[in-house]
Amino acid sequence: MAAKTMFTEENFAGILADYDLGIFKESGPFKQGAVQTNILLVTTKGEFVFRYYESRSERYARFEVDLLQYLVEHGYPCPAPIENIHGGFIGAYQDKPFALFAFLEGEHSESEGNGEQIAQAIGQLHTITIGYRPDCYEVRDSYDPLSCWNNATSNAKKIASSAEAEARLAWLRAELDILELPEDLPKGVCHCDTHHSNFLYKGDKLVAVLDFDDASYIYLLYDVANMLFFWAWPDKGNLSFDKARELLRAYEQYRKLTTTEMKHLYDVLKMVIFMGIGWFMDDDEDYFNSKRKVELLGSMGREAFYNRMFGQSNKPANF
Image 1 (cartoon, rainbow, N blue to C red):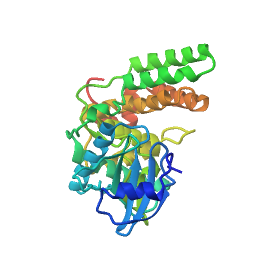
Image 2: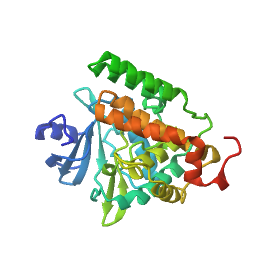
Image 3: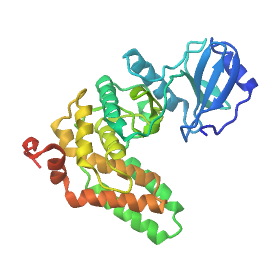
Image 4: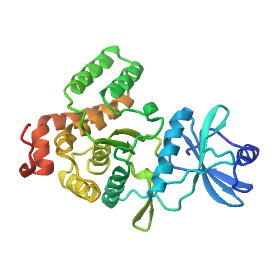
């Protein structure tokens, strides 16, 4: 259940006093979500989502709220933040921020056939946000080698064997040092978590993109690589280039990749995997499986990866 803090009817009555949303009727936690507390809040005026930021600052929450306001204004299918009677969108309970959002109907789905719709939704998101930098963007994760390294060195302390911890960090350091992430990669807002749990469907149609808790203003290629990681690379298997190309074709219905992005998708796909390694450095199964994936990419190389993904006819001249 996605509820770490429990709220009573009296708690919600006090919170709702700052909103024009009617009188509290009932509430219940959502099954999806693992970091923040997300609760369905039912009042005499309808259903709403109460999001309590368990481990985030007010500025971190403000990025999400401001972003969702911007997206809703541009017709993007995501939850709309709800304004309180004071003209704000962020409240506080026991010194932690919270926000309320419109409840969107739909069902979660784990169907492998959803990947292309998700690719289109991410392409649409990038078309809307390219160059857009929300307030408080600096508090969000940078999803780069420095971020990965900081997480890895912290989580390596949880490994029982100091020799093993040092070996894992040495391997990761060497791999991070050979990444190529050019400064001119186009930037905008990325969702950063294209896992199936963050999308809603009605029938077979995607109707909403949820949970921008990991979203950040970074290079847009990160979302593209993240999408390939979740939807074209089975956890214990190999990358399906056929599926990856299908996803890219769906994405490019909204936004074409630049030549620089095509050339460095290889590096950013590695970066997605490295971020997971940084977060789960002490998880043996996750570490060795992720290391296997990085080594598969390494054995192929940047140029061969490009040729498999895009074809030699599009090959940049300066590999």
